[in-house]
Image (tube, rainbow, N blue to C red; front, side):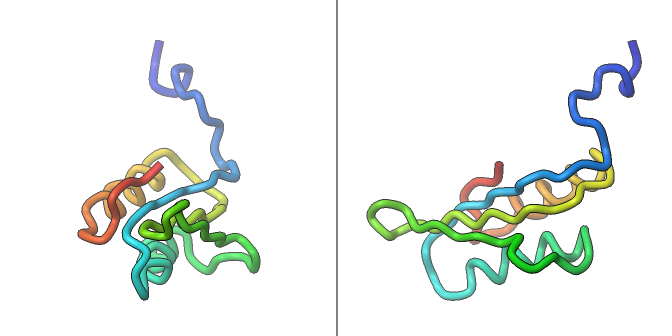
Length: 89
């Protein structure tokens, strides 16, 4: 078997990228900025935010058209390397 037949996702496809961090000013902009660097301009309405029950954390979800696994890997690497991002899914 090769990587192409083992691939679960079929690209291009729409995917939701979620990043969580402390609910502080600018966190949404950090996440959107990182994603935009890799996918270009985002469509209207593709970003949503949800605070945690206690309001201490914020989950930012960005729906994008992913072109390849390599592109997604680069996005997740940059998100998880950022000091303000606690978790990326």
